[in-house]
Image 1 (cartoon, rainbow, N blue to C red):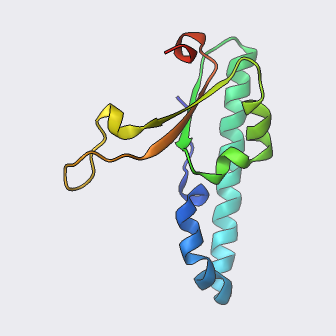
Image 2: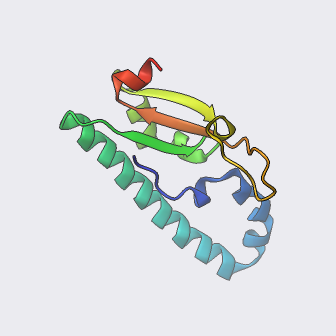
Length: 119
């Protein structure tokens, strides 16, 4: 199971974009955090590729709407013939919010396990 931090790939990052752009210290911090997030994402993708090369199975998980799915290295992985992408809502698996009600949370899963492809 591979799941790098997704905070910097969240659509919520757009909410504070204007604030960052008017405060250089916030923009500098954001750029540093974004670079770290990209290194971690690329490392996770390398782990997926390593698993493929060693004939090991992997599952990569990130929010469905995350911008990480548009990363160039991720796009190459998504195009692999032996890799399958699926979307699932976490409420199907019992995810609950702070109030105790079911929480939808659309999530993307990427795997090279044939048994999971057909589930």
